Length: 329
Image 1 (cartoon, rainbow, N blue to C red):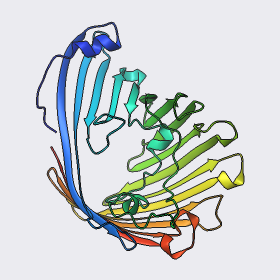
Image 2: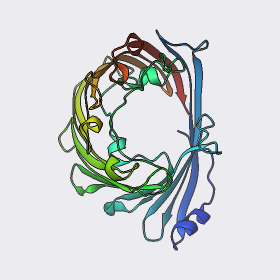
Image 3: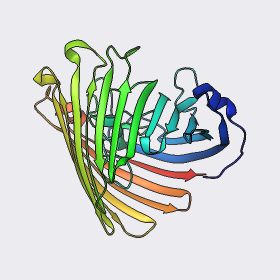
Image 4: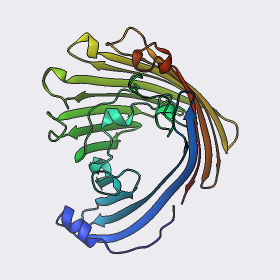
């Protein structure tokens, strides 16, 4: 990432707090990728695609020592509402008191931010097929793909993180207010411990009250990862606890990566989604590889999906791939 231009951002501080900015700058970074992907039951005639975005970050230090950062991602592929802006947020870093972020769009809730943290060289087990242009027969005869288990999330939400209160422990909380698309507000909490070399252990719990009433659920996830030398292994288990057994779901996953060199990594991961509404589990696997040289990455994921959405008809067994060449600048 390169600083492209420095300008004054005193207007930013004035809109946030009644103190002056003593130092400020605006930076820009970007990424672009060219790729292609497909599936054995896909229907797309052209499986090539392109992604690109530019993120502008403005930061300034207040008189009280707090640092305020504004982040705006320009991404025309998203077209959020009528805007070409994608993720956008304001973060206040209060030092030992932690950080508070307000996300206009794209901010993760605590559970949603760790819904799938299994080691991989490229892509999660469930997203390789679903995120390609040729998405593997998602038609009226195919069921809806299950992903990982997250929690409520919306525009204009808030999040708090603290990594200094306890050595090696990250404490997090998020709040999704009620409003359009969210009948009731939702709150998440999470802990992540990294105080032992190579070890990451986390637990997060939260609510999904978007539908309101008896449709509200309690969601949680726990995960453990351990890196030793060139190998990283991980296991994760998540659950949706609902008022009825048909809405109570479970998700389990494991993954392993091996760094062949500083530039090349390979990975393998599997996941199983057990939906209360189905007697058959959706099973996903992903074999992935990536090569990095400077700001360039060439990565590929080869995935297999069985019983999409918990259905056993042939159209719900899919094999697919996604290959992408990306650049960061």
